[in-house]
Length: 77
Image 1 (cartoon, rainbow, N blue to C red):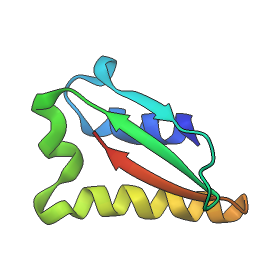
Image 2 (image 1 turned 120 degrees about the vertical axis):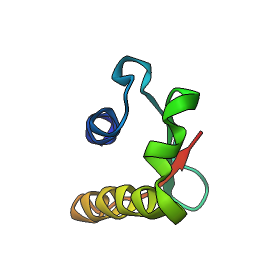
Image 3 (image 1 turned 30 degrees about the vertical axis):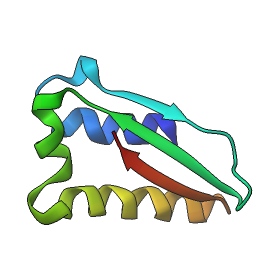
């Protein structure tokens, strides 16, 4: 899952070497939180107009998590 999120983000940004993904442990609600970090100049590319790209990334990640019977959340930091 971590590699999938990193691959998606690297395809969107101008500086793919600055893309990092951190994973938190499962919280009390059973959700794993993924933190996506990108260069400040690439933040707009990852979020998109009115958050459309960010929403699409979250949708793809949740669909993948559902296949693995897990709950996830993606935060763009």
